[in-house]
Length: 207
Image (cartoon, rainbow, N blue to C red; front, side, top):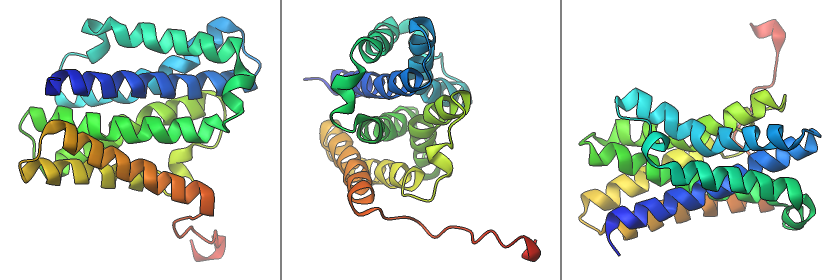
């Protein structure tokens, strides 16, 4: 399997799981099927769109219309069978899977253009989190990105692992898998053990 196809597969899986997470949130908001599909597109393509704009590259879904088809289909699947997906407590787990996959795909895109560690990790984090932020804001939910649990930090660390393993000469599939595995493991530990980063005490008198 070529590295390019491996990246595409990671990207398409990420699009699907993020789109389902968006679709489920829209179902919870009692939107119609059009609204569900629209919301499913936000986490699926939002982060990658912002990444490509910042990198000065053609927006990926203008040429890769498979991503749009996958995202729309996932939204319809969430609308038609929400109980199936929620059996797995899927919103947080699907979101974590999408976060893991998009973190390394975003870092890979930047690395392929010759950027260094800082830009690759930032682009990986943006790809993984910006779409979910749009989804949460539109649905009037507290963005996962702004909560105290380990979310954007996990994406950043996964992108960093991808870049470091790439620098050591490992193959693209190994680098992608190593980075994505770390992100998902961190999210799993966070979800299961309810771990959080230190949060502000909200002392208004100190401001």
